[in-house]
Image (cartoon, rainbow, N blue to C red; front, side, top):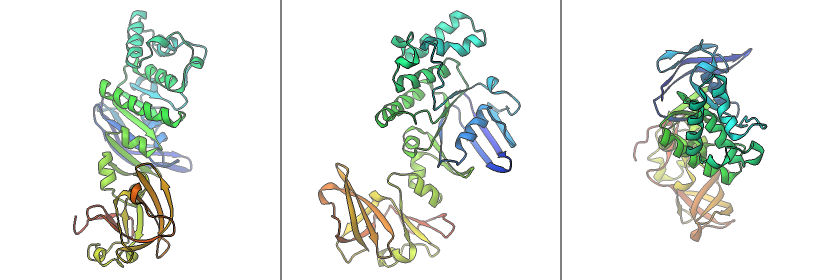
Length: 346
């Protein structure tokens, strides 16, 4: 287990700068997830940590030691790729042992490490199979096992579940989280899927255009987003944003919004449904059945699109007019630059 420090990391692929002055501390044994839209620089940052690419500026330290000049093979990081990168002609055992054989580790030690990793990942009965005889989830476990046998300082995961179907992704998320709890290893994980980030991470790093927007626990990012970008990216369905001028038409809200509010943010699950004529006027345009809840789509008077999560038994129907107001403790105010403002009341 190890610590990771990034100090003022820049990366350019001439003439384009893709990483801008990134500073980050990853604690010993922590599971940190990089999340953000496509092209935000999360995979590039992971490759810089691994040593597969070199930063244009700044310093990378593992356990306090600068590693900028140390090659990927000697940094003590093990990377698990989206594509699994297994050798199709080799057995599961051979795939997991290959890297250890290349560094001339004694055969008895290789046997011990591979067997231990296989037991941990429930691959014991599959060691003599070829990758083509395995399911997608089993192949991904082999790729993880190949990383485990190296006993790395830091595990690096680059969107490892994106090739799996939805049901398998859910089960593999649970397996990865359980694996981290057993190993207590330092892990850095890249995904574009914010649900994956929320369920796996001790802390999430939200990236946009090569810059860190916010770092925090899943709950911190969900409950206290620093800005409009984070507020809209974290949470599913995404947060609603209502212009302040429209929100102030509800006199109960007008007294609460800070003077420099440009827009109010409310998550779909945090609306109160009121009789027509109270709160903000909403015209319902559609209603989606989700089992215990419905996702209600509607428009406010200025055509702002709003979504509400409501109990299925009392869901309004398309064409209805009703009033809505955010629950007292669950709304956010943002200024004209998109930064969160402190509320004047809970």
